[in-house]
Length: 411
Image (cartoon, rainbow, N blue to C red; front, top):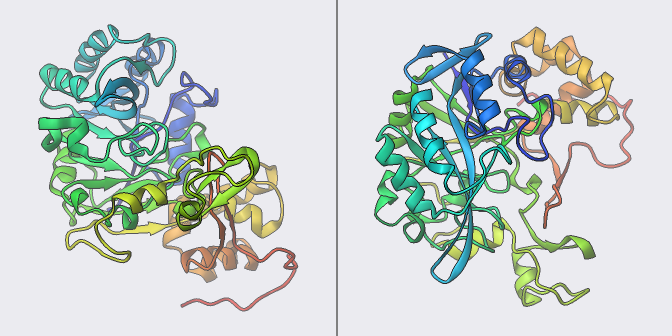
């Protein structure tokens, strides 16, 4: 079997999150997409926690269920504190094996911030001290630093992060079993740092609405319980952790350097030539993920560690359909075609990864089949994101006539 897991999403109680992010809609979206395991998210929020306790039923050790979809208890927190003479803003994912342990964690964390103010609460608490406190509650908890390269709120962020994991987590570094790469980086970029070789690299959607579930995800060869998942990540078990599903990192909104207000987008090389200053207003550029990775890298592009978990880059199916038929992604026409394909082939990921192109053409049309094939081959036109602006991915050149019937390449 193959299980797809999205281990970082948000509930409707997080800021800038859709009101549809409730248990029912999350489970429905996961089922349509072919996702079998989803994070509960936001267990620190009292109202959301009450809903989770009411609606989720135990399934396996540390895994709960609603309407056929498995859930694992976790939350994201924003740690704001001073360390090494600098303000740090670090987002961390906390995982727990039971509601009883969640309640004990929440009781401790409530002393450092208002848990009811946001599903992803801001805590005046050092990441190291928090992790130590959580492990004192239960050795069965684990922590994954979230989207580790995001400039503003992450472990390695150019504006408030650290240059090494040890600076942040000190003697607890060995208890970190995985790192989340985030939308603006992929495993290949992280492989450029030898210091990260010991950690499993996971990818998750950080979804704020149901249709964003699974835009990044993890693929396992079995359906794990909580402790098996922890073991697989700790051991980087390639037999059970098959691969991650990735955005094209250029599509992430912090991949390149830039200054959004002045519409300036630079590669790292261009930014360095400009002394990391905006040529329009002379203000500092927001240093993006690629630049930050390059500044810490000790390997050349293309290096692959011997025990690395593979990855596959994809474009969400609704985006593919939208471009192929020439309408907006959030339209009735796109939704109808999306649901038809998912129903016929067992979910979005089956369409993107497995279904023969000629079968997609049979159920849908030639242009959509061609678009899926181009994504599988990486035959795309990409404008990298920068300074909070998502990148743009085009499958077809601008101006190409939608009615054309180009020859499909099946190999």
